[in-house]
Image (cartoon, rainbow over all chains, first blue to last red; front, side, top):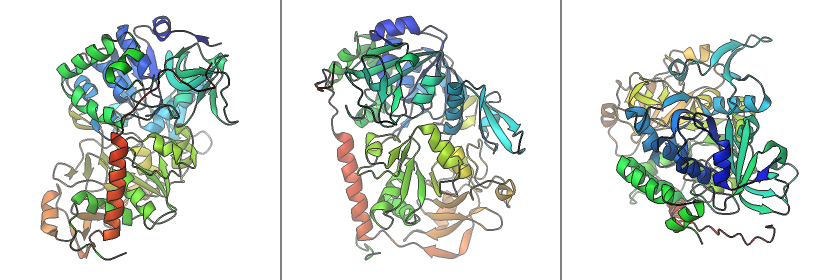
Amino acid sequence: MATFVSLSNAIAELVRDGQQLALEGFTHLIPFAAGHEIIRQGRRDLHLVRMTPDLIYDQLIGMGCASKLTFSWGGNPGVGSLHRLRDAVENAWPRPLALCEYSHAELAAAYTAGAAGLPSGLLQGYRDTDLYTANPDATRAIACPFSGAALTAVPAIRPDVTILHAQCADRAGNVLLRGITGAAREAALAARALLVTVEEQVESLDAGMNAIVLPSFLIDAIAVVPGGAYPSYAQGYYPRDNSFYQAWDAIARERETFLSWMNRHVLDSPDHSALLHKLGVAA
Amino acid sequence: MSQPAADIHYTQDEMMTVTAARQLRDGAVCFVGIGLPSAACNLARELHAPNLVLIYESGTVGTKPRVLPLSIGDGELAETAEVVIPLPEIFTHYLQAGRVDLGFLGAAQIDRFGNLNSTVIGAYDDPKVRLPGAGGAPEIATHASSVLVIMRMSPKSFVSELGFRTSSGFLGGRGERAARGYPGRGPQAVITDFGVLRPHPDSDELVLTDIYPGVDPAAAVAACGWPLQVAEQLQLLAPPTATELAQLRALNERTRIAHATPVKIHLAPNSSNAV
């Protein structure tokens, strides 16, 4: 049964150094507030998993929180590189970062297997990409026991903690996700512990019959964090701040400008609301 | 097509985007990437292909954005979609199940057989340039019935052999892809800033088949990292028409304004539904 807690208490209780952590949400509903709180609380040696690392993992990696990254596309969408991710991979700054790299289809299959409690997921086996030689333990070639068809197996991903952002939760702690969900549902069901931040708590979810709702019993903790996905977005609440994603390119390009931005906006802000006020986006 | 815009200046990006849009037939199911592919698909949808079905990997199917998304998952894509589904199903039930007619790809490097690198320049474990990585590309390149590639041509990006193959084109050429039983036919056109390259029917090697107005084929050959063959019947492509340019520029202008609109977040929700 989900309990409502503050974000700082939720991170303090659920997230430990050295854990495998998935902050999911595909462009939409990225849990930025939760990522920032992990940085504030100084977690280290995390194995971060995300299909698209996005700015939030650029920040976690640049602040030295991670030692390993499992991912499938590591850029700033429509803009260019994630400079902190690149600096970690190319120059081991601020510390070395081990990579486990998939295609989107493979990582989605790994989450789906994790959600189903299966040891592995399957894809058709056209194994001509060099990703397989570069990541020899990430996949295996197998034959279908019925047809003999060549397949690729990916090991299930079961994060120690999955963290999502969603639009709303009702009093009982059922959570509604609307719009683009990416692999959020699968990452939630694959997790050993699940933390969700939401825009607001509501009387009734008013969800359609086939809506994506995470029932309360799946969830360990819910924190109400308005604006918690910014500069990503929450459909129905606020749009993606594309100009921030464009501005991040210059902020993150050099270590000094990155650290100074993170100090001023994340470390020197007690919480997400303070950060949104500093950035001038709180109304 | 309306009158050629003979006296209208246009950019290389506009020529590439219009050329890509013209390749898209109405009713096709397209798996779209961000940037020029997204611009080309939506231009085609506004012009000659109103029934183009656009799928973005974030989970939006049959989307009709009024402005171009910066990311693959902007809210505009969800709001204008026929349906939004979880991402795993996009890859399993749609792409790998063979329901995509056309995949649109870019990359940092392409080789003479249309294989693509979007992972790394230099050694994988000690890279000179770490690129974003695979994303949806390997499965798009494998499973889409055909593939269109859009890339600017230079000796560094059009290379004889790749240092790292992220996504499969024709592998080693001479029918190797077909012999390996790939479901999709591979890259059928590579749209560059000089013209269009297409695979040779026997060797699978990419050959310059179409050229833009005012471009010297020798310049295209010089910009290519392998000895680029030029088709005997080189087609001269028409410049963008006034209609094509007007639609594309309006689309880009709507997009620019939308992306520059400041975001404001109401921290105290006033929804009557709030507890």
